[in-house]
Length: 257
Image (cartoon, rainbow, N blue to C red; front, side, top):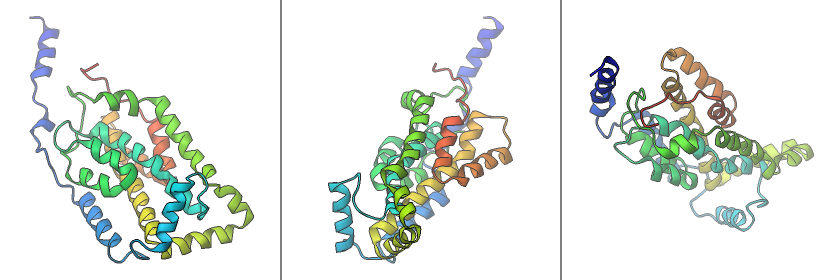
């Protein structure tokens, strides 16, 4: 057996440190945020559950999702439920281990239920992997979420969301009325208030997971460098994370390729 073959066999048989970790590891931050969101949403959030105002707004969105006739600024943020779950999945899945809670059901449901669905996965998933040495990355992650064309499409679609909500004409016509209407809506409607907090938590979750994703791609990057990258994505809410996914380094080559 030559030296190269010996090294390859040793790398294959070398136990991965992440494999020795438990299948469930409680993350106090994500768990606390999820419990707080649930408690706040069903108790002291503005408005009331199932109010006529909320029912009318939901029916308007279902009947005419392009132009439901609600505050354009709020609807811009609401439309971000179309992209932020994908962005979160793009950052969370590469660092997720192939054991413990399956990520797919939670992240798919997050497109409809936001952090109410994503929170349990992030709070209870196995300890995120710190490297890809000898590990397999799932085909969906490698072929879709890591595809640059797909990432640029998500970024472009995110940029287009304010256009679909018609927020720019509303701002040009009366910016004060646009802002005041937004404040009044989230102050009186439980559906609007909870969805705004929900989308904010999803965005902040993506930011919080960014340092580990960056160091997975740049193993020699310092903690400070990774943190600076994450903070840079926070400058432009949601757009910053979408841009990061489009520009981030590729995952290191693994044995599954």
